Image (spheres, rainbow, N blue to C red):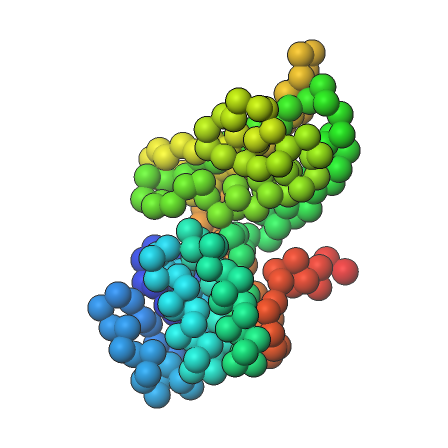
Length: 241
């Protein structure tokens, strides 16, 4: 399969290595200095593109892929406010796109666990949920896209909450999401349900970025032959069934 890489930072280079190890060809690499290559024959010949760029270009990169008929898998976070717009554009041009805040298979299982635990504790007012994410100092956006997904799951499953924010709300109806930037931490997400007598904690620690990159490449392999706006949960379900 011919894979185009959009964004050639740490994740882009890691995706390149894993894609080659899995027998794929890298058709082209597009970064900030050669965005004109979206119009190159090499890019247009790609079976799929994988985008791990930066928040400021996330939306534009996805649309650029769609407009050239190349299926795109995007793991760039920080542009979710335009995600619905990108999905509508995908349907308009009859394209293929998959976006996820985190392509790690372990994290997506963690999402499923979070939904289940929230369904059990969300109606028990004795427990108050808190969410903390920790990432390396190079990560620009906060909270992480993964934390946003976890937060939305908790808010959706807890009737007494109506939103999430990085600062506490006076009315107590807001889930507090904390972020920490330190060292070279690949990614840690901690959910704590706290009561006066005990606490229940869920935690996922990424040991390296390889899990994110491998999941993205596997998702691209799956997405390349499909159409429409794709959901990573459907991909993960196809693996565990």
